[in-house]
Length: 432
Ligand code: AMP
Image (cartoon, rainbow, N blue to C red; front, side):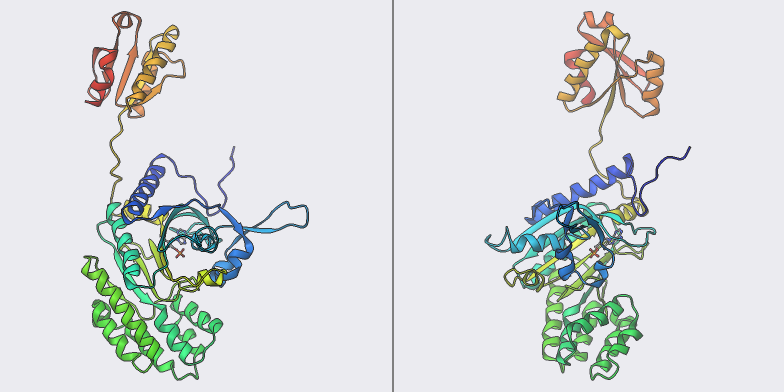
């Protein structure tokens, strides 16, 4: 008989995957602590209007929309497709009067109606860092550096950063009087690497040639191999545009700060654009060579909080795709470095001793040892077979004769050895 399946694009994470996921969450949380980010927990559902307001077409088309049961007509609510909108909402309300900068960390599941494939799900997990209140390049550098720390700390040994700057592209387009919706359409094409389509939208514009040169640059080996060289070349290409030149200087400063801090940027791609429309400055993504989908990405978004009705507040941030980091860890054989947990099965030799077995389990747990009480009422040999199969380390056998001496039998299942040991010394012996 077939049972129910998970909903398309969603998965169950069983023990090993769940442990990997938990390890990444713990590492992200530790990273947040080390960099001074405070964790907030926001609802999984948000109002449709919030996401509709500023998310851009890419996200809007992929929203999971629910209608609630309100008595006066149904209201639309959405499953959050990302964290940034929720944190920007907080920035315009609760956080508003707090001193800046605001460093905020969140982790949890997000939902997008994507076409499922390897590394692309409809329910997936992100760890999210937002740094609000600073327009300085050191804030952008921090977001890249904490991503570098997370990648290293989960055990990935080879990963690459790609850096770009939508501020440069937008500055050129604005200088030519191209309105924001058209700018968004151009950047969307560029994100999909549909460069001809992007150029078509600026067919008759003076800046077409500049765009073509920036796009050509990404195909040009010597520049792509050396990020600093690439930035110098961008400076030359955009030199007749004042604001674009300043934005290029900003990119150059961020690149230097990151480099000086020991984090290598593999490429600076001048034609790089990201899906979300709210970016205004540097953008970046991190990859491993074995996978062509990004493990994380982010950038600067200086106008979002204002667009949500808050004070103008410059901001930068990143979201890491935990499901993809799990994939990357598997590919690079990085194992979670969680402390090795000793597992102990506690088995009474007969039914009358179950209360004693329960008490001994409690003593072990108080000492921080994971104790699994025999709850199936099985005979000793069956219980031992099962413990073996589940790779339990020790069995504590609770028998009448030993109990009279205040002792139990401790069996090391791997070594197939056993000794009688006083209950008061049991936990210490197991911990070793
Ligand atoms: P974004 O919120 O679009 O900036 O994405 C940040 C990160 O989330 C990406 O770099 C991916 O690692 C991850 N991500 C985005 N979409 C998906 C998806 N459909 N399934 C799994 N991970 C995703």
